[in-house]
Length: 294
Picture (cartoon, rainbow, N blue to C red):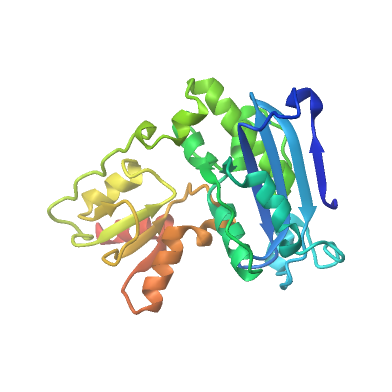
């Protein structure tokens, strides 16, 4: 565990006026509170080369849950004397503001936003790029696009759930995706570059007829979507007030942060308001469909 470090790499910078093409951010959290950041890592890339890194432990001013500690190894003892998020907000803003910021899923975006609100700091204005979505387009043949799976596939050294190592690894996913596809950074950011595949048409009859289903972590034209449509369900793109089921894909790339996904949080909010929105795993739903089909 290290204290705050900012290390520019002169051989990559070229000149003092050089700025990164993109920066990558990753955070670890102390507990289920999304804004309980206890470690943050930021890495800047230019021309496919790492040009600076920033890493610090953070006092989250919150409890540490045993679940989170088992994942990243950080405890309350590690953050004694570490700065709070409010203390380092200006440094983080200086690295991210006005730039393209990569995160592997948008959990990190949500965590930074929540921490800004908790500590009374301005939201960091940056252009976000999700490396999960980039990886899914670059290597659709992979069964999972979790960061540890991608780094093994790409041969990138990686210590999972260390904020600096995760940030560096997500940056390399972008670098390798650009090399592999020939699509530049602007192409990954452009909405027109994203191929939107229609969901399969719902069957006229079936055990899920009338259901409006959102799949979290899998394509709308994949195997699961076709199975749901064949059972009569209408597969939607995002959770709304008419959603009846949110299905968590077995291959979802968000890991333990799936509950921070916007669709998951929206479904939970609908349930709190009394809506009959069900949150189920793909495995459970497949068992239920097999039972209904006899």
